[in-house]
Image (cartoon, rainbow, N blue to C red; front, side, top):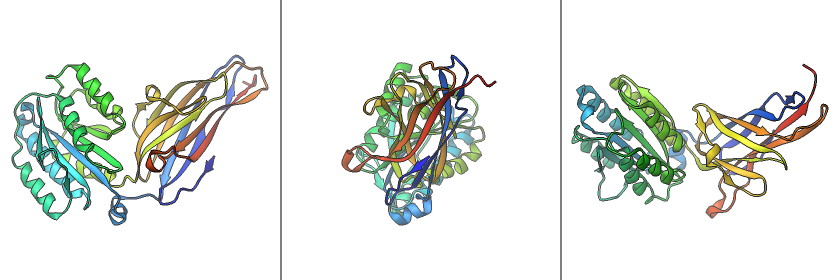
Length: 339
């Protein structure tokens, strides 16, 4: 394990947990790579440091949100609680989602800047939210993407609440939308009630490197949204990648985040030089995450050992330049006949 300092950024560390021993003929090496970020911003310190962020809240206003009426009321209260948690200076907007997407606040394709006046105006605008219409989540995400792309904030995030199935949109349209939005902003998704489609909500969060959960009781939405927004406000660095290098003859089988949520990153690899690939991890504050890396190595004789992979955490460089590793860990393979 090695750590490298980076000024004015969280301190990252990396630890590799594995059984490096392989039986004769064994080729697949498994390792859990634990990445921990400490000393970065919290929701409170980020406010003092002036960390910039842009957030769009997408609220399901389809007809099913009125059954029972507590769902729509809970959604309004939760959105108001999230707005209250925004730190001053954060760019934000609220979208009402049905079979189309409508800007609730501030409107005209703009983002508002959080402050006492704009928070009060946004909460007043929530009074006009009512249920009616269908569900086409891709349209909500496309509008959120358009709004967030107007911001130069380093942290760009969405919060999406839905209670049902994406019934008024072709699944291929939602998939294409998620592919287009991936890497441009992260998104937490919540299903309220018990009728929502689990795969759709978790698929949205996975594609956009966010969290997904069920909130069966609408009365708990405000608490959940407050905690979500506090975590977003504590993010300090975005576009962090897990870079995995393998030697000649070794091949990555998969890279998955396994804690605190499960996200398969294998198909999102981008090449980063000879025998190295970058896997996106999104935005970071004070937190720890676990990644499962599986590498297939060439067969070797008993008693031999090799470096199977080198994992590094890479932060973005200034002005889009390539970044340098801030933490590193090694994955080993040793062949043995000792049962």
